[in-house]
Length: 208
Image 1: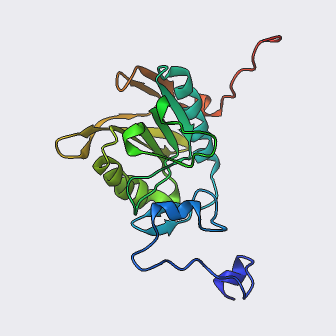
Image 2 (image 1 turned 45 degrees about the horizontal axis):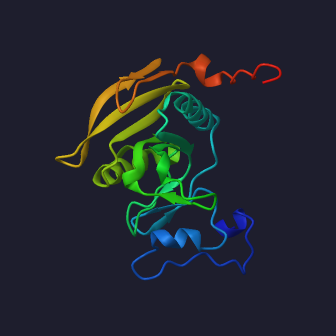
Image 3 (image 1 turned 180 degrees about the horizontal axis):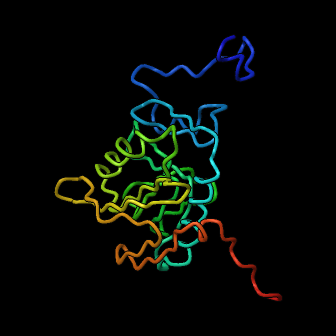
């Protein structure tokens, strides 16, 4: 049986054929029927596997806690693309960016110069991209802070990197297991143990 039939596609389905030189960053907004969260790396489309529970919970934990701690001039969002250049438009799992970078409700990407922190939560199919390829591209684009979140026995481990502007490469600044506490780029204190990752946000008081 063909792979197309395995995925429920009929014989008339046509896969997107890349132009000579590959796709461009702007093509992501125009190509029809792309799966959600498709990325562009080196002119090639990258499709993601189904979401795991760990990855979804880790993103929710970081998004919610960072939202509570960022200064007023910054904002937090998850799963939005960054147009690094014409051939690269990755989609980090969580982004901390300058609030003035918002252009309206139809916005689909941000510029690298608006980024403060980008976070990748590693899944089985993204190990090489999240550990090697994407950090190199983020650093080359000048994004000052990169976090990589790995799973260890079901618990998150956060690897924190800071950009060396002279070499345009990341320098590791810490590995955090139970608690992520940083002074830069702003004071951050996040409980990242199993209790925290499974904890639901408290309901607002009645009448609020």
